[in-house]
Amino acid sequence: MDYGTAQHLRVPQGMLGQSLTDLIGNTPLLRLSRVCPAGNVFAKAEWFNPGQSAKDRAAWKIIREAERAGKLGGGKVLLDSTSGNTGIAYAMIGAARGHPVRLCVPANVTPSRVKILKAYGAELILTDPTLSSDGAILKARELYRESPERYFYADQYSNENNWKAHFETTGPEIWAQSEARVTHFVATLGTAGTFVGASRYLKSRNPAIQVIEVQPDSPFHGLEGMKHMESSIVPALYDPKLADRKMVVRTEVAYRAVIDLARSEGLLCGVSAGAALAAARQVAEENPQGVVVTIFPDGGLKYLSEHFWDANL
Ligand SMILES: Cc1ncc(COP(=O)(O)O)c(C=O)c1O
Figure 1: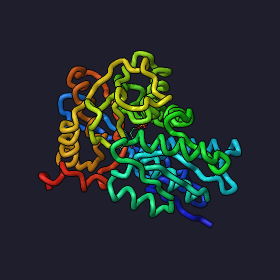
Figure 2: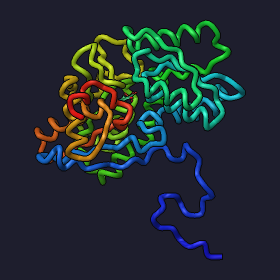
Figure 3: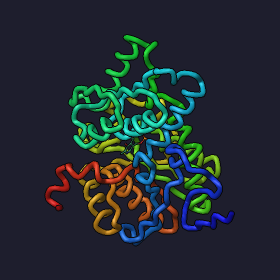
């Protein structure tokens, strides 16, 4: 029988359906011609992942390797601290693979994030908002110490599979999608997994590629997902020697860039994408011949309750 060929589908031919985790990665590389007319800036649109953020990549590798090593399965609870996106990825993949998920989350994350995590069936432990993501880290460590036999403590800040996910997927995608023409790679730091993994891969292909890390300019920055290293528990994955350049972005500048992306490119992004854009735009203006690639870690729907939108809606 001739089943025809559905050329418009992105599903590989001859496959009887895909699983959720097959949809992780291979996100589009968007050209940002209107917000950066003076330079060549491209961004990975990470909200195309099924959990709608870059963290699906890290969470899936962490879970996959734990399953392989027999550390997860048979009712073991996946435990970690998260300020949101990794938690969403754990909760989503945990649901799809039958693992219970328990997450320590700062109590000041946006209400929509809490609802998303609960919708996937994750159990939440809300931690002191004044301690931000560090408070959630300390709580997860405490729970694990109390009963290590109950948990697989995923520990995204120290788990090598976090940066390896980006070494194996994000880096190669950028290399291929830019047709090996990338000259600068710009990424924000949270756990540092994205920056470290993709940078190491890109440097392995071409050591001349400049890799640039982006941090908030102050401890109380409000830029979800990003860490101000000087005032935080520094993730074990962070390699302070890797970056060719370290940039800081002010919160108001990141917010303005988020609005620019929505109004000028039609891209509704999260606030760390705004920080990434602000830094990438500066790099592109200084290097008009360069090909600057950055990461937009997530989309903007979860951030519409942020006050910077109030005056702009
Ligand atoms: C919205 C957002 N931006 C940036 C990051 C930073 O990514 P990474 O943890 O890979 O450094 C995260 C990580 O949680 C995030 O959720």
